[in-house]
Image 1 (cartoon, helix red, strand yellow):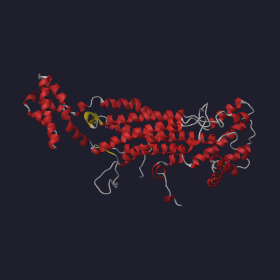
Image 2: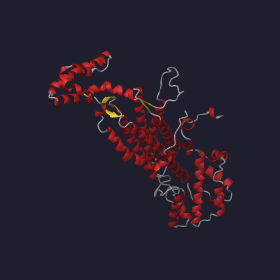
Image 3: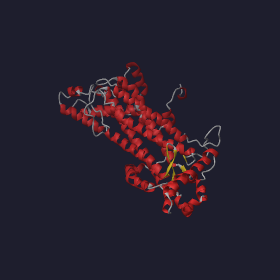
Image 4: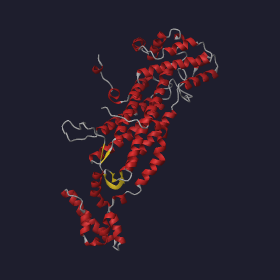
Length: 478
């Protein structure tokens, strides 16, 4: 059967990066198992067990050459994936065969490998998130002072700036960055704990020497690149670790869904657009369309990422006593898919933020349409300063505003409140100041200053550890 005659996960075949796809590949998984067996043998030898240099060397020389067909055949007979790979490894390492997996349980390779893959997955995601934050920071800085309509309830509200709105997105992404960093740093190794976490098998191997058992755990943990191991485990590491990892990915999914939804809403207003290729087709029927397909893809995949969080939550809740196996099949799907999904939405968002297009004239037109209503309070204040009565002015403005609103809503015309104010002799004292009163820049408050301070104090320092990886661009292939 060829590859097109069976289901292929689009997360791998269509979307995710090569490095993330490899991180959760069979080759990465099973070579990591072999490395863990080598670490165990080395540590056991160093601590005095009967493991020879020749056995360790033999295992190291065959760490990468996995016979996947043999392993599959063994698993079909044994119905046990770890023992299938023990036998497959032993077949090419006959001298080392007696000491492969010595004292260990299946979770020694299974769980420890999962923790390595989670750690390495975070190491792939964090620079990608840093690049998105960098691109969006540049965008926010460029448009820090460009006034635009703010929206509450998706109704026109007080003005903000394009850059200030981008900082709302950035603040959420910065929270995600800190969360992912923390989740990565909090990961520990399961280590060498035995079948129910008591280390009984290793205590027996070392004839009751507790210090050597602890040394074994520490040495293997360090060889695997971890600073610490969990001090207590059942047969597995606590499945709350998976909740912690995937909850931060799901939270980032919520952030990206919100950002891309905002861009889609603004694209409808023709104020901002995602990149659109020269030969890109927006619709098979409507040739004029410029659909925000990148943002739509991010929203679509982000929903999947958010939904995946239910898996580790439920899995952790039903782990009976020291362990039950109903976690296994679920985790084979939920862990890789969470990282693969996070990977592609970050890469796609990077592509979006590298090519966002802003249309200032459209934004200005929308402001002109709404600003007269928003400026009524300023007009009242100006009239009071010119000697007018606030209540009289308020009533005048109220009546004219209702008339202008009727033109907009009932007749489909433009907002003519400003023309009505100019035509009313009552407002003669301030007509010479109307341009200043209606200058959009007087309605944006401290937005530009907030952008500058936020980028300087909170965003740029967050990017410092990733400076060497910031400049990588992402080209969207599909």
